[in-house]
Image (cartoon, rainbow, N blue to C red):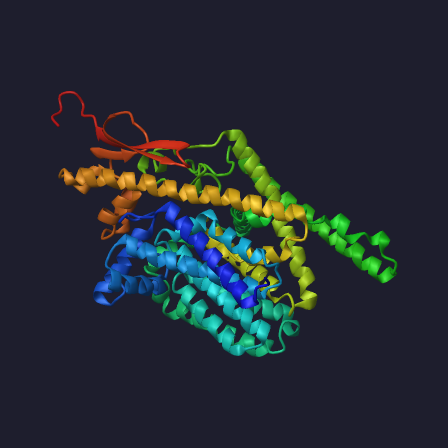
Length: 578
C-alpha cells in the first residue's frame, strides 16, 4: 500500500523520535549533579527562578539569557535540580532532530536520507553528550537550526515574514552564545554573493537581515553587558587580540589551525555522512574533456577539471601537513590533552575513545590517562582516515557550492548550509580557544549539505552510510552511558564522605564539585590559585601517598570496559596525628 506524503512524514518523524527515546533510555542520564561547566549555567537559572533577575557568576562568558529563561520555566514547574534542567535540554534535542527532518523534507534529498541524516546528527558524539547536560551547545544549535529553517523557507518561498522570523531566531541564538549573530551574517553574505539568482527580493531581505546585524553591533558597542554573563570573562576568550605579539603571521597560523581542526572534527563526528563521499566520482572521471565534442564545452570542462585538481591538492596539502606536524609530536586522534601543545587544550569532549571530559584531578591535572585507551596503531589509522575524509568533505562542499550558484534558487538548501558552515568556521578565528565541541556549534550545517551532495544512487554510498551510522550509534550511546555511570559513582563517593561529616574543603572530588561548592561565589583569583592536595581524593587510579578507603566499580560498552572510582585518603607522615 502506497502511503500519502503526510503519513510518510509522520512515520519518519515517529521513527526518529522513537530512536531518540530508546537512545536516551539506554544512556539513562539520571543523577542530581553537574556535568562539565553546566554548574555555572544552572546557578544563573536557579537565581533567576528565585528572584526574576539575571545574576551570573564571575565565570559566565556566554550571553546565556535565553537559556536561563528556558531553564527557569522548567524550574518553576518541576523544581530545582540538575535533572530537571537536563530534561529541558533533552526537549530541545528532540526538537532539533525534528527540525532537521523538516528542512531535509524540503531539500532535494532521497527519502532515506531524511531519516539517516537526522540520526547521524543525533549520534554525533558531542551532540548526544550535550543533549544529556545543561551545557549551552544544544540550546544554541536548536536556535541556529530554527533560524536556518525560517531563512530557508523565506528564500525558497520569497516570503519576508519567514526572513523576519529567522532574524528573531538569530537573536535568540545570540542570547545563548554571542556568536549566534553569524546565523544572520551567513545569509546576508549569501544574498550579496548570489544576488538576484537566489531571490528577486534580495535587497529587501538583505535590509531586514542587515538591520538585525546592526542591532547586534549596537549592543556590542553600547550595551556589551547584555551580550555576556560577565564581560571580563567574555574578554578572556579574545585575549590574544590584545597582545602586541599577535601579528599577521600568528593570525594566519591560528586561522589555519582552527579551520583544519574543524574539518577533521566534522569529518569524524559526522562519519555516516562523510564516509559515503568515498563513492563520489573523482574530478578526473567527472570532466572527461576528450568525450565532449563542442570546443567551448570542452574548454569549460578542462577549466573545471583544472580547478578541481588544484583544489584537491591544496586542501590535501593543508590538512595532511597539519596532521603530520601533530603526529610527529605524538598527537593522534583522539588528541591527548594532558600536555598542551600547539592549539590543543585540556577539556575536549572526545578523549581516549570516550565521550565526556574525565574531570577528576588524576586525569585532568595529574597526567594520568583515562582507564580505557585504544592502541597507538588504531589512533594513527583513525587520524589519517579522518584526514582523508576531511579532504573529501572540504572539496565536495566547495565544488558543490560553486556548481550550485548557477541555479541558486533550486539549490537554496545547499548554498545556505555551506554558507552557515563556512561562516561559523571562520568565526572561530576570533576566539583565543578551540575545543572539539566548537565543531558542532560552528559546522552543524554540514548535516544538511552532505545529504544533498552524497551520491545516494550508488550502492557503496548507501552501504557506507548505514554501516557508519550503526558503528557511531553504538559508540556514542554506550560512551555517554559510561560517562554517566562513572559520574554517578564519583558523586556517590562524594556524598558518602559528606555523610560522614567531611567538609567539602577537605575533598578533591574533581572539577565539578570544586566549582559548584567553592568557586561559584568566589572570584577568579581563587580559580587561578587552585588548591593544595587535600585529605581525601576521588580518582580513577590508586595514587602514591594515598590509601584506598572505598572503591566503586563501573562498567561500559556492554561490560567490555570495567573501571573503578576510588575514594582515597592521604597517608600522613609518621609521627603526625590523624
